[in-house]
Amino acid sequence: MTDEPSSRAQFNAHASKYAASEVHRHGPSLPVLLAYAAPTAQDHALDVATGTGNTAHALSPQVGEVVGLDLAEGMLAHARQRAQDDGQTNASFMVGSAEDIPFPDASFTLVTSRHAPHHFLHLDRFLAEAFRVLEGGGRLIVADQTSPTPAVQLWMDEYQILRDPSHHTQRTVEAWRELATAAGFVWTPHTLVPYRLDFAWWTAQSGCSPETVQRLRAHADALSETERQAAGLEYGGGALVAHVEQMMVVRLERR
Image (tube, rainbow, N blue to C red; front, side):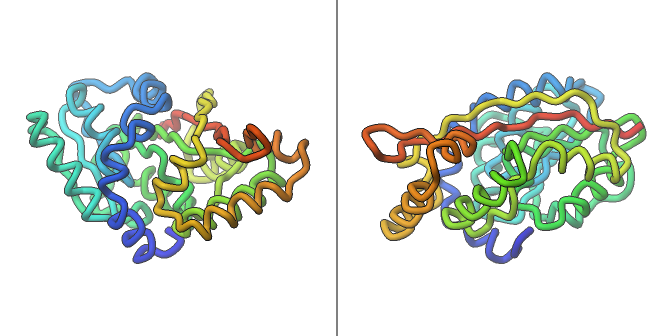
């Protein structure tokens, strides 16, 4: 990731907020991810950068076993507690890096990662690791926020990093496709799922100070109306109230 100690500290500090977040627990990318994954009782699944375990918990009733992997022990504590509360005996959670997955080759039939890869500094390493730990015929299902163009990506990365320093980059679909293909995956049709994120909620979620909130507003206010529309920004009463992120969900196959 951008800086693994920094990412760990960021998410440990706000783990309770993520555990309670309906956007992360029930957001609209999750049912699309599950449909693309088509999990079965024969699957051995790995959820990378699992956070508080939302995707792993959703997979648990449908697979033989699922492991959630994350850097932040504070997030994993919430994941373990929820698994215990829900009686999910086939779900386990452990500390580990997306770029150095601590499992042997061909350990899983299904790998997922949701709302996380924009934090990965070396996406190529994650894709190579996912490919390595998948059996032949396995699949990787990713859900992550995207930028519509490279120009919007440059602006959006500044915006996102100001709000959360553990963010790395919000890639375009084309950049994703190029890296996934280079890793050996077969790209299947993808879906873009829009997320409308309230500005007040979005900044509180990552613990932004009032000064950071003002800097974010100034960063957005400097854009022209055309640029605001391209970035998915929503204004009301002359003030920034929300933005819309296009969440890509894609099934990548290891054939």
